[in-house]
Image 1 (cartoon, rainbow, N blue to C red):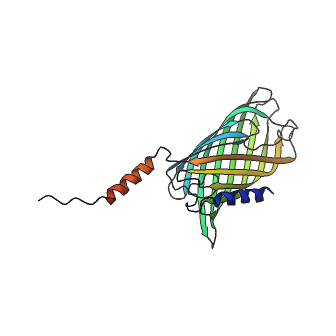
Image 2: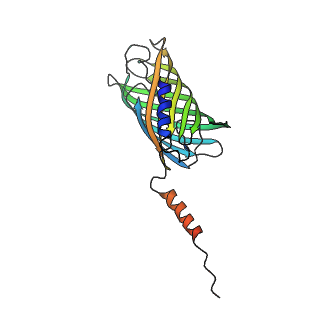
Image 3: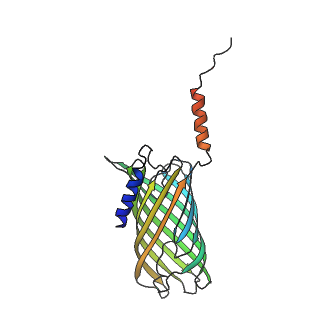
Length: 252
C-alpha cells in the first residue's frame, strides 16, 4: 500500500506540468549531480536534517550533513531490543557523504541510475535519563533512481547500517538495520526539487543485554535547491543577451 501511494502521488504531481525537464540533482537517489553545489533540507523521524552536496570529479559526489536528532539514530528501533522504546532524547549528529555513480541504463520508457553511498557519522546526545550518550554510525546505501517521467524520479534501493551507543546508562549496545528504500524526487522548478523517502526493514540487536531483532525505520521529506539567489540565472541571461546583440561595425 505504501509503494502504491507513493506511485500515485508521484504521478499526480508529474501530470501537473509535463513541460519541464526531469529532476537533475538527486540527493536521495543514484543520479549524479549536474550542479557544482546543491543544498538539501528536510524534516522526518528520527531527525531534522541539512545536507551540503558538491559535484566531484568523474562519477564522484561528496558532501557533509548535520542532524538535530530526537529518536533512535540513524533509524528508529525499540531501544536496542531492551524494551526501553525511544533511547535518544535530543542530540546533534554530523555525517560525511561520498556517492559513487556506477551506471546509467537507458530503456524504452525508463532511465535507471545506480550508485553506492557511504555515510559515516557521529552523534553527541542525551538519552531519556539525561545522561551523556555518544553514538557512532556507518552506512552503505545502494540507491537506484528510476526516471519515470520528465518531472519525476522514483527512488528504490537498500541500506546496510551499523550503529552503536556508548556510555549511556542503558549500557553499551547497538543495532544493524537492513532497510529497503522507497522514495520520489520531483522537479518543481529550475532550482527546486522536493523529495520524500521511507526506509523500512529488520534491525539486528547486539551488545550488553541486547539481543534478537525488531523492525527499524526512518522517514523524511524536504527539498533540494541551488542557485536560489539568481547567480546562475543572471550569468546565463547576460550571456544570452550578449550573444543576441549585433556586433558593432569597426570605425574606419
